[in-house]
Image (cartoon, rainbow, N blue to C red; front, side):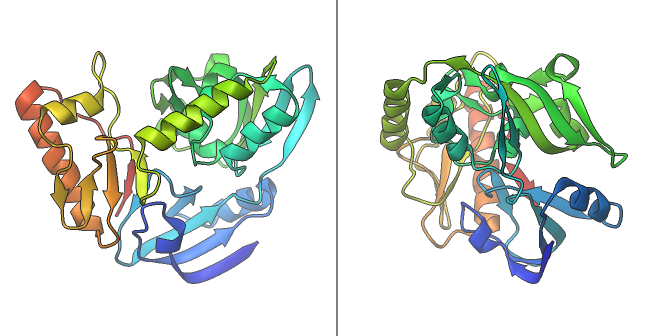
Length: 279
């Protein structure tokens, strides 16, 4: 276990916004995590910081990184166990190397496997739970248990895991044969063309309301390109907030509130945030 005090979270944020954290702890294994959480109260499990907006003042929180929990274990017949701290891009690479297919549509998502499982991340009509059989979690009683997918409540960008704030240790996946290399290339080209990957961002700001696309609602509300301080609704993808290098935590919060207000006024739809906000 590595413990860092007064750790700058700005360098751990894809949005490049974040203050000084009380502590930042790097976990070596799941038993170490289990023991640690028996003594902690105010903590947050952070992956790559790709969908979490952090306050830029002092954060009285102990951040825990599971990046060293990054093993892939072959279980045979297209089944693998993947630990939560693995970068999702490395899972896609493993699929390519082992001719496994199923999550190509998610190629290019910058989070960790645990982060995507936590929120049932997805893209282009595919969700990560489409190929999950079970999830190993640490529950509120500090017990490590394996829950079959059939016993979990899962919805669009929502899971029982997230609602109960359980910690994901690993997940068992079942893939098909036949990695779709051309599909991955096509998806990555779409991302580069349509998303502001060249600027600090947190991915999709709002969930797609049922029957609508958040990006379309933002355009119709005249909010694409809207800027407050250094934070702006991207001209490349209206559902992404980008940081021009000067954005503050308050800039982003105010921009989110203003966009929600404009969309509500023009369409009557209440947008729901996809990103997590830590104050």
